[in-house]
Length: 454
Ligand code: MV4
Image 1 (cartoon, rainbow, N blue to C red):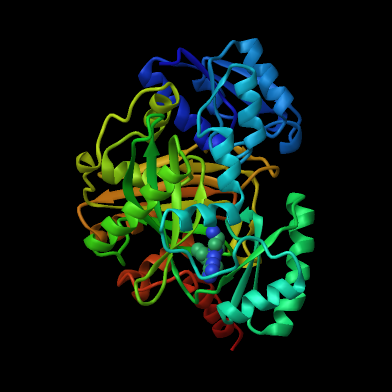
Image 2: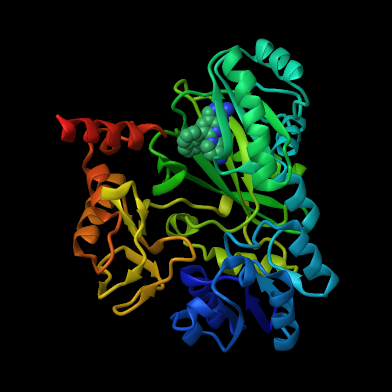
């Protein structure tokens, strides 16, 4: 096992990684930008190094700065957390070159899965259902039109280098496809430096189900069940839960086995997530793989009793998987609310600044992963998540009840947060019955706006 690692991230995930390292006797080196000099995770690390000015590009995304810090601090490995450099194949490659273990999959795997058209091809090769679509990227308007004819409208145009909802467009007919194809290509080129796009049949109002997987270097792969992330607004997840209220045990076993097939086909080592869409008839379709630990990993920790950061460290240091599929036991129900500092009255724009009072809830089955405290100033430079509030209970009804109580108890003064919206969603009959899909929040908010205007 490693003796000393560097954490190339900030906020709650930096703190989360430090916690596991301390329990495992691993020394931690935390890096920070000038905007994070008063961050709480810096007090919990064994060593801290400033890596640059506030903008991410000059600090948490600055590969030479981070590698220099790792060399100076003499670490054996780097944990990238989520976001920033977590899925940057070039960074993983530089770590290898410098004889620093990147805590994640190999650069080749990150690169293969980062190309969403290639990931689709890997899934097809593994005989896992994908959404009907183009055979790889479409190179011209004519090729796009012919593929769309074959697939049938509506069509979704997706950037090969995209993912997570970035660079997507819906075309409901041929004129739409023509304009959408050129717009999506230009957007993808500008955003990712890679203008390649591919087509998929547009699945209307799907549910979003993702399977947590773990793989070791001997090729053993298991899944830890799913998370249902259907409560989203503009591709920002608001509420995540496990298990999904819309999967039967049979479906869970089938889709989980498909997630494992994809991971094996991609030689996936370490922790990752395989994303699927579930349509109204219960059919699942692979969409993409996230080659990192995710924000919502703790939902899986609560229902499995595992520490996923510990699993990542063990797998990255070369250990074999310590459990088999039959050892994975999903117990009870867990829900997470991402508490973002955003202003619901102004289109959820970020609401950074001074948090005067910050009193997190507690009690049975309540977990709060946060870097917030009374007097903390949320910098405007990074994402606006201030806390992850999780509740674990024997069943879904109990978890919702506990979450409503915990949201009520949470005191955050000085900044606006998403808490009022999350309370309303948890009280909504469709959510209560588990009947919501990915269009739920936007339909509900549109309804609320039109009512207000009456
Ligand atoms: C889709 C889709 C419908 N059909 N692909 C959005 C995030 C990215 N990971 C994939 N996404 C979608 N892909 C096809 N062929 C609908 C979405 C989608 C969505 C997916 C998950 C959660 C919320 C969503 C909201 C809008 C669209």
